[in-house]
Amino acid sequence: MKHLALPRRTFLRGLGTLMALPALEAMTPALKAAAAKTAPRRAAFVYVPNGMNMAEWWPQMVGKGYDLPSILQPLAAHRDDFNVLSGLAQVSGRAGPDGAGDHARANATWLTGQRARKTAGADIQVGVSIDQVLAEQVGKQTRFDSLELGCDKARTAGACDSGYSCAYQFNLAWKGPATPMPPEANPKQVFERLFGNGTSNEEAAARQKREQYNQSILDFVLEDANSLKRQLGATDRRKLDEYMTAVRELEERIQQTEKFKLQNVAPVLRKDFLPQDYSYEQHVRMMYDLMVLAFQTDSTRIASFLVAHDGSNRSYPFIGVPDGHHDLSHHGGDAVKLDKIAKINTFHTTQFAYFLGKLKAVKESNGTLLDNCAIMFGSGLADGNRHAHHDLPILLAGRGGGTIKTGQSLEFKQETPLCNLFVSLAERMGAKVDKFGDSNGRLEAIAQTTEAGPRQFPPDQNLMWKKKV
Image 1: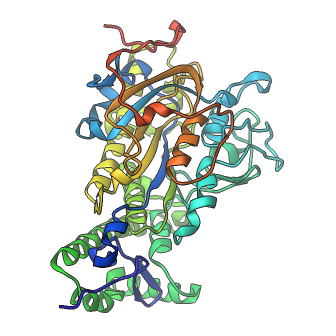
Image 2: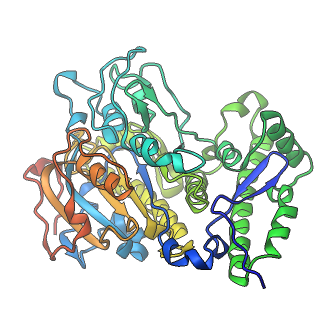
């Protein structure tokens, strides 16, 4: 049988539909097999709000074989796939002469490393975020330069935290010092963006037809898919079936939330409906699934996900926490409040574990999709009670295409700039970034194996960093 050679940019097409394919063996012709072993590298930045219960976050040990504290327990199955990074700071988030507004600054500075101008007007200014620096340099190789996701309705104006514009608090990605990239919070819109094609009229016609006749997006590319499958080997046919099954399962979940909206939400309120009003956990997981599909199909290599904006006072009654998250973060040392904060933090690491599991399930030429990712997860605050911007809770997941040694707890000198990590990640993504924000070097330790030993906690005892044993 003649060997089928497919270009990496192969799509299944239909009315108003363009479905990118995952990496297949047919995209690696025999003569190029040796040179095509390296899969593309991806980078993602995932933000959770209001800091952590630090005593239940930090391992007591560093190096390999470190202990997993309670908040990180949901990640136990993936402990060899990520690092816990301690000692990193984002000093531009601190109050200084600007006074209050730590939640807005936590969001605004996390990926920019720049101090936000305190204003509630149109004269906002902070800096370009690292994801957009990467998007500019490596994003051009894919269909979308970058993908910005969130679970909150986007806001780019208005007054929010203590005189800071809402633009600071509701955005992670900044294309320019005064140009936020609002995250898309509706998974249906992201899904349509990933799989839509043609003119707006063609996309609208396809969407209307699917909804009217209860069709799947797969129905529109079925003829193209069947024609392709007849030319593929057994392994590629299986990979294509697995991919299309994943797309269909996500599509069905999105449709379920839309059905809930039509049945339970008044017409006047439907425009502002988000899946979190149906199930917050499902909302978060759908956004993670969309990120997996975008990376799997090489539709983008750069993504950010604002799970919730800092200062969010969302309650979590479904895990036994009916209190507002922000209110709890000002715990004052209260053990009951700290326990509830830990439950919220554990909820978020549980969802992150789901994301890592999905990435690990996708096989690529040199390992798994997760192996070819570098994913930063964390918050712009450490202890929310004191609005601490040092010793930030940061995880780094994925092996960055073999350039990161995982499975460790890594301790850096206190006040080490978080921006040093960004310079290191840019290097792994093939971008030229010698200096970013307040960076003063690179985090060479992420590529090395660290000897085991006890962690040295910050001297500020008021922050209750260290777990009492």
